[in-house]
Image 1 (tube, rainbow, N blue to C red):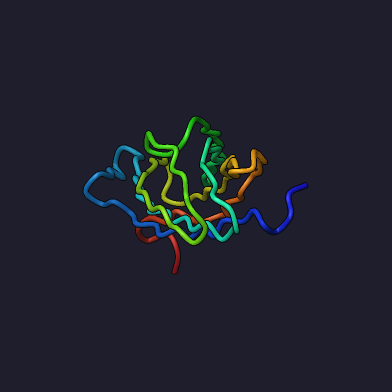
Image 2: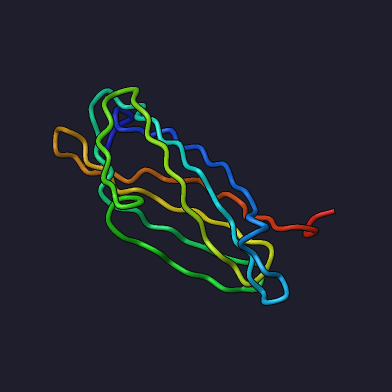
Length: 126
């Protein structure tokens, strides 16, 4: 198991995209911006992503693939990378969580978890 020397700090900002959504057609679109900082003492490369998307209607989806937004960024110690993406749900509330498969410059591969974050549309919480 990798030691603490392999670590990413991940933060997420979510926004409901009203102009791209159509509640009358059960379409709720969310944009999210992810900020990744390499908190390791070695350079790391983001190889793959794996997302788990759930909504309040009981739907679940897994999405995985190489890199993020067509890139496989390499981050030196302390360096950051930010990207934006999005997803559409059929109900106004859901959540996402996931992980990145990373490779350290010494060849060690490790998973970096992305904690669960919530997708909340209009008038869903009082």
